[in-house]
Image (cartoon, rainbow, N blue to C red):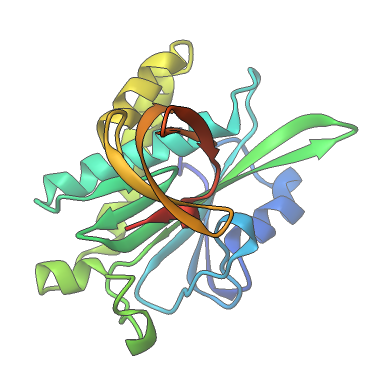
Length: 237
């Protein structure tokens, strides 16, 4: 189960970094929650603003059967989407793994592998969800919190429990059928296959049609030529 073992820390640099350093001390499914992070991080080493009021936590997995990191990303993306949609919040996954509401980021997911002698011994999945925290003025155009959407505070323990239970059920149901996880993940994705999008290729903005979506690449048809897009920051909103 996820969350049978839980450690809550008031302030820490990063829950992912904490678990990566201390994974031997925790069981499979353990979670570490921070009231606030001083060095929260997102994909590609980017910083993640993590003040008090948000849900900042990491989950540790010590799987007997190795699953690709992308599977964990998809499972938690789906779990978060479906829990928030029960609250009537129409969120979506902005490829590959950010959760957005009305063009603004509300949640990020960061999976990381721990390897010893080139063998993966554990997986850490970090979740950063804006819940009751205030969004600073300089980020209001690109980020939003649940409190701002619902005009009221949300119980963080409810979200933590609901997301983890749903993620665990998805993992148990689909760990031997990861192609089905991908199908569900694609259902909530923006953009989708067949959508027309604008992308930045070698500092030139071009328009094309999404041909195929994988975990780390969007294949876009631009004038009959397939171009691989590998960063969310290449997509022009």
